[in-house]
Amino acid sequence: MYKKLPYDVYFDKVYGGWLGKCIGGAIGAQVEGRKELHNFTEETAFPKEWPPNDDLDLQVLWLHTLQERGIFITSRDLAEEWIEHCWYHFNEYGRFLKNFLRGIEPPVSGWFDNEFFRESMGCVIRSEIWGFICPGNPSLAAWYAEKDGVLDHWREAVWAEQFLAAIESSLFFETDIHRLTDTGLEYVPRDSRLFKLIKLVHECRRKGMSWIEAREEVLKRFGSPDFTSIYHNVGFILIALIWGEYDFGRTMLIALNCGYDTDCTCATAGAILGGILGAKKIPDKWKSPLKDEFVMGFKLPRKSFKISHLAHETCAIGIAISKVLNRNIEIINVPSHVISMVNSIPIEIPSPDVEMFVDYLGMPAIGKGEVKEIGIIVRNHRPHTLHAQLRLEVPSEWHTSSPLKVLLRPDESRMYLFRVSSPRKGVLWERNILRAVLTSADGHVWIKEFGLCGARLWKVLGPFWEGIGYFEDHASINKQYIDESMISSGKELELFSRGWELSAPESKLPLDKVISLEGEYCLYLMYRFTCPEEREVSLVVGASGDIKVWLNSKLLGVGIGKYIWNPVMYWFRAKLLRGENRLVIKYVKRTQHPDLSFDLYVENKDQRPGFSVWQIDMGSILD
Image (cartoon, rainbow, N blue to C red; front, side, top):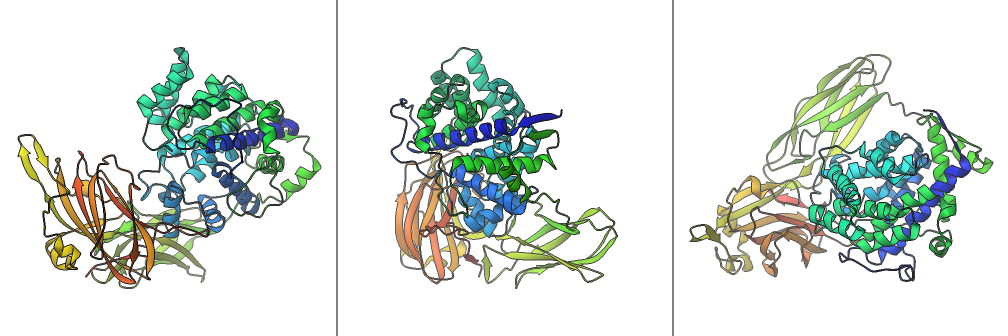
């Protein structure tokens, strides 16, 4: 349906959305991560200083990407801009950086080696930009949101971003929160947990529950120890919007007092209600402390840090999109200064003559001496048949199958399969860059670089356990199931010479795939690796059980008494040697299923963009 949207209405709603985002992010930051029910009032909700807000910052970066690269952006465009400008490495952001810097692109970068954080709030809080640049077109907003979400998330978190983007796109012509939610639900699979969560919140409202009772129901059914989990936090956002009843102050206080990821929940609720109401209807008490300014936590070339200017820039992108991708919406009465911004935005459709994509056909990883099949998809956009040869270039000491002939008619695409084998001796590096090289008969060359992660090689002794009863097995961190003095005396290689090998593509070891023993047991695991330089690091271990950790014969510490796994449970400061290092972990499984993860962390003290705090330049010693 063709609709007209006056610019003053468009701007007021976008400006209101960004104001609400900034207000909510600022008041929520002061208790971010705290899980108790709070009792803030309008007199106590405001912070003394207004902090930077990653909820907004990355969306300003996405706006910059649209301004520089045009409206037909890809996930890779967003990823490259992040690497160039943003140092943020919190939670799933860090997993994205680790993956992308290893050559693993979206959408694989969102789910690989990211089990714990891939359904967290990091992409959900980036939804507003997509809704605001696609007024009245929730499908288009969801299309953009998916390109964003898959950088560092998968499935339900991506759907949550699409859900919110659809709402934020629709609020320019619809203000009823229940109808807006119904629109958003069109982009959420009916069999998903997210769909059930959203329905639960509405059910609580229909039953006449208070917002506190609704919060309890959400936590009872969808709560998580991860304070950033999408489930309870999206629930809190909806509770604030529904029980807030379009009162800005009440909505903000409900979101804030629900707790957990409050900078995200308050910011998103504030953005949606700010967009519904428009900037003019947000009470001065809430918006005046901002002084129409926002603060960023990383450097980005901008002429202005005024929220109103940000809103005009956002609207300019929306107008540019309406000329090409959103033609059923006409934005009228546009001021001349905005028209000049619109004219500078690239709107041309990219037209590569040939494209190449990678399909890992599973994990983007390979272990010691393994053979892996990889698909290279070639798409011919040329107006004539493509005659070419496709070859795969691999690291030294690796092997791959012979080059393949390519014959593609115009607009035809096909997958070409290559087999890659890794070395059995030497070093298997964690970061490995491969190149698909396509050479046409007329001499044109196209290159696609991509990463293939070298799986960590662990040597394992065990499992060991004691049968102490008819229905019970037992293992203890205090009992020596092997001669542990051999570890502290530097005889690890001799000790583990009789161990079995375990290949771990991700930081979390796939123990459940190789050990089916259900009771308690003990394992000793050695990771022998090389480091390119002497380096101060943190060894980060997650375990659903008890652990004991040695590095290069030195006991670093013990971790006991925590049995719900997350990847950042235990931190041990240590110095890696240049060259060979030997890590030994004693793990006592205490739960039904084994959970053990390990990673190496180096702080990004200088806040450098394009730096992975999770180290990617190590290699497993295979000999």
